[in-house]
Image 1 (cartoon, rainbow, N blue to C red):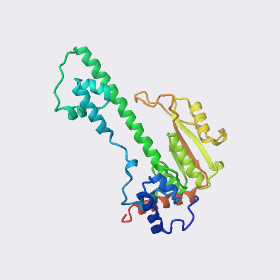
Image 2 (tube, rainbow, N blue to C red):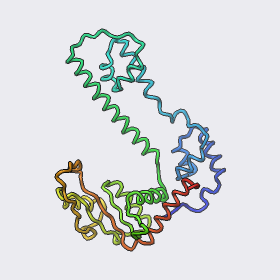
Image 3 (spheres, rainbow, N blue to C red):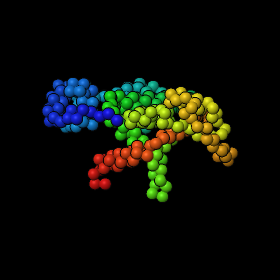
Image 4 (cartoon, helix red, strand yellow):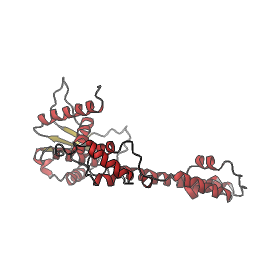
Length: 286
């Protein structure tokens, strides 16, 4: 694993003074990061701690605009259902915003009302999905550029949640990791790469239900990892229980990929030590 140059951030107070000055000039965190070249997000937030973000970086409250628009539509005689179709927000929010305004005359049939309500719910679901995706995109953008340290620490935590651990009654001082999420597998492989574990030390195996396409799953994982057939052991097939209703039956189901690292006793010990280092760093009282 590579690390930042020793002493790069030694002058914390000098960096903080510079960062605060830039913050007060109206720069965003991303802009400040690029000026003193601070590539550590945790340090960056500490440098500007106590300084409010500039107004232009604050996202406007979309609810305020929705509330204003909802009141306008209600004043035009629209029902809750019709406003919901128009704005895509929940009827409970609409009720809260416009309950002091007069109710419109109801002239539609039961079938028409039902159709409008259905469209309103669909609009609400669509809006929620848009908000969900926007929140994820914003969070991803906030991460910014990472040094090698962050993926290393993330990999340690990842292994400790998904990897095989050594027990006093069952010595297993070697790395064995299993997961079905392609992005998790990518991050784990990056973590191994940071520790100079080459592909020649990896043995892979697909664990999958016997009713699925094991051959296709092996091709998928081989392409994702960039490793050829020689790196793969024979797939392990899980026997299907007809009494159990499986939900992982779509085409995207590729089973789980098991990654073994040969000659990894020392690396396992370092990983366990790093895990407890993270625990102690997060809570020194532990």
